[in-house]
Length: 196
Image 1 (cartoon, helix red, strand yellow):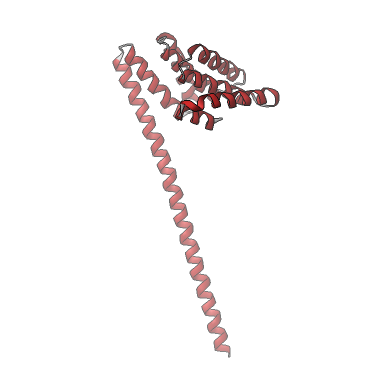
Image 2 (cartoon, helix red, strand yellow):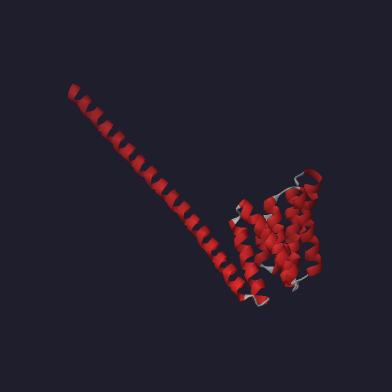
């Protein structure tokens, strides 16, 4: 499903395909499986329509996604759906509902620790505050966006460095073991030669 979202965001030609496959996932999940997949399908369709500026359809699917995620008690999903709904309200210049929705998403996001979504929400709040001439709030939101972005980047770099360090240590130990094995083999050969 996330690959479908990525394709959709990369090229408008994929939107019809994205919607098709999202609908298929909804059919399968509504018959066999978890509500989370169904909700993700609706959110994907809503996002496609939002990107295409088909706002009535976007609202319908994004709202449906949110309702399912609330029923499923899926906090991460609720934040994701609220974020997209906030973006929808921002796109149709409904700033009051955009702020209400994005702030609700942000509050939930802070309790569950979703850095990527929190970063997205702060960015959209910054745009909203700029459009409504609340420049100090826009600046504060954008600052928080970049702080989270930097933190996530540092976290990623730390993980990469840790992995490289672990690989280095593993290689070093394997090399030491190979040298020890080689030394043992030489010692055994010397002992065999001495016995002869």
